[in-house]
Length: 430
Image (tube, rainbow, N blue to C red):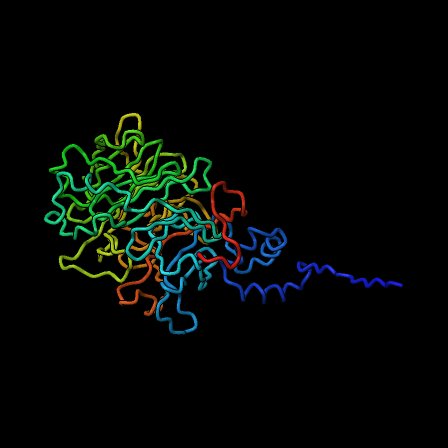
C-alpha cells in the first residue's frame, strides 16, 4: 500500500507588508537597484510609488558626482570600486550608489539614464544603462583613421600632445540612445581637436572634415560642444563660430555660421559655449562669460576641460538660430518656465517643483558641481551655486582627480523593451 505525501506551498503577497517594513527594506537597498526592481516588477513599482522612498521619478534631473561623504568612512579608490554619488536635486536627497559597470570606468558623456563609459586611458567605449544594466559597445577609438588626423597637421608642434594621445576621447555627446527607434548616435570630441561620429549601423568612428580655412582654424581653440539637429551635426568652437556637416557628407568641409554679435558685452571676458535643441526644436547657443587666470591651474576633475579654467563667472547669454535667414537672435527664456540642464550630458529641458524656472543649470563649472544662471535676471545673474561633498579619497590611484559632475535623467524603461541590447543576468560579470 502506497502513501502519498502532500505539501502545500503558501504564496506570500510581499506587497501587503506594512509600509514601515518596506521602508526599512528599501532604505537598505542601493538606490539604483530600487529603480531596477521598479522597472522589472510591477509589484515593486507600486510599492515604490506608494512610499516615494529612495525612488527617482522618471525624467527628473539628477546629478552624478564622486561618492558623497555621509558617514566619514575612508575609501581608497572609488573608481576601482565603481561607487559614486547620486543626488536628487528636486527632493534634495543624496545617495552613495554602486555599479559593477563602473569598475575602473569613468563617464565621458550620457543621455537620460544611459552613460558613455570608458577605461582610464579613454580608448574603449561602452554605453551602459545604469537602471536596467543594458550594455552596448561603441567602436574603439582605434578605428579612427590616424592618417586623416596626421594629414597637413603638425600634431607635436601645434598642440604639444604626444602622438600616442591623438585618439584620446575628451567627451562623447550621446545624441540618441539605444532606446531610440533608429538606434544610437554618438559624437566624440577627440583630444587633438577633431570630431568623429558613429551610429548603430557603423563599425567605426567617422571623422568630420575641418573647415576649408584649416591653416587659420588649426590655431584656434578646440570644438567645445556638438549636437545632432535636423540631420546635421553642429559643433561650436572657442570663438562661438558654429560648423555644420551633413551626416552623409561628413568628409566635405562644413558650412560655417558666424558667432552672434558680441556688441554690448564685455569682449575682454573669456567664453564657454554649449549647444542645445529648444523644446520647439530650434538650435540654441548658450554662451558663458568669465575670466580665465593667466597662470595654468590644475583641475581636481578626472576629465580636465575648459570648464575648470574659469575663476570669475560673469554671466550667460542665449541665442536662437533662425533657419530661414541664417542669423542668431538673442532670447531670454524658452517659454513655459522651462529650464535647461547642460554639461557632459546631452542637454534636456523641463519644469519641476523645487527647481527654479527659467534657469540654465551647468554641471561642473569652475570646479563647482552645479551653477545656475537666471535667464530672466539679465546677463550677470548667477544663482544657485552648489557643491556636493565628496571624499578626498574618491580619486584615481595617483590622486589626480575626482569624477566629473554630470546630469542624469532616469527614464526607467522595462527590461526587454530594447532590441539588440544585452541585458546581463543577475550576478553576471560586467
